[in-house]
Length: 403
Image (cartoon, rainbow, N blue to C red; front, side, top):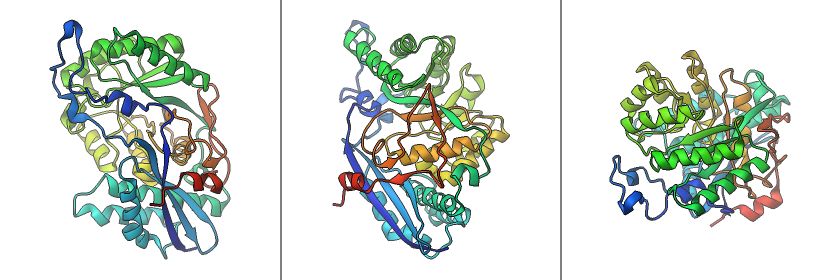
């Protein structure tokens, strides 16, 4: 079997709700009101971790065609500048794959990594673009074998996985009734969708973050799972102190509490924190290796549309050797990434919990079938060949951006 053609299409739909990235980062992010009307002058400066978000939901659909008529589906992350990702695939990465056997997926992934290693591009757009091709090749392998990806990569440890609802911004001002009500209603919506676990975007100070936890806990009840993501908003001392308070409230984990580049801080924090630390910004095998080699221990949470299935599996296996959990991350994108995460999660022994972005739109429900429905906080692993998904061409025509 040989690859004959690679298609990359930018997909876009409007936001149906305020995603946490946009809700959390208001224009007045430099100054968060404190009691008495004083402005926030704490360090680290919050704007240094400000993420950019597109006004639309965007991603990049990958279709890899073969000479045997099998077409593999994949997805490359395209939150910002998705057309740049498409251009990079069209003009460069696709030529590496055309004429190759899609079963040589590990060889191809090493070639992708090698291609930009000399330029220092070991993560970012390059790897995110390659991830979609990697997922599509695994989809082809599964379809050609008549088995699901989770079966062809080694078998399933579990037929369904526990997931948490994400996309919820915590309160910025705990004294604001409207802000508290917004979070309460968003949490209620998650429960109505079948979720029993919710992750909150925090990082607005100890008082605000703890108030957010209490609100979500009130909705979920004592048996529900609460997770927090501080988006790199604290320094080591602040994170350690807040982590103790979060642990007292039974919070499941503390995600990305420190700025992205505080590697030493993360190593030390994971040693002393009374609550598990997760970090979605450590998502290459080399970064995870160095973190563990330095003595750090954390729950690894790579995204399939950033690390591909191949490297996600490598990261999970490495973490397992150090006694650490694996919990695939996801954010803005389509249901293809959810399905890829499902199969990886089913096939690794150290799976902990998976993320499911909460927005309902044509990319997450409609672009492919079957729809992924949560029941009692669980998602069933798809049984069809490959990813187990069928592309809806009619919906594709509605969401593709061909400019």
